[in-house]
Length: 196
Image (cartoon, rainbow, N blue to C red):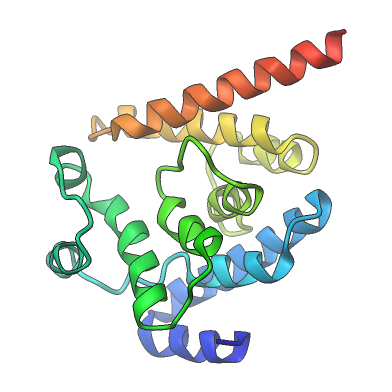
């Protein structure tokens, strides 16, 4: 499926505002992809499709998760907002014929991340959170860092997300903590290498 076909699919299946967000996420992700020499074609497809399941209601997401045998444990049921990631990956695979595991992972992981994200997956995860229309405390710092140290920018973005969830007294998916700890370790290792 080429970019034009993806664009037509998104225009038919997303609200205009969500479609515009997907295009801005693609632009941000491509910028980061050029800096870090990532696969730009995979980045483009992943970024455009990352929210392809956003049109679905919570009930539709649950039904799709059951259809595609996505585990619906207590953590997921308490945090249905993140279910559009894994469901979106299945839609991309089964409705759009996307077979590349890295792209499917980027779509699936863009909500809470993963402990073993590839470069493309890291870029999509962060680009979604820092695209030009996003606005929250420290976003300029995170955007600046994203061009210099992707892992540190992701760590700060996760910290900001956790703070936001806690301030709302909302449910924090436990995997968020696991993912954060991986980036804490990675950043510490990077600092250790620089100090030698």
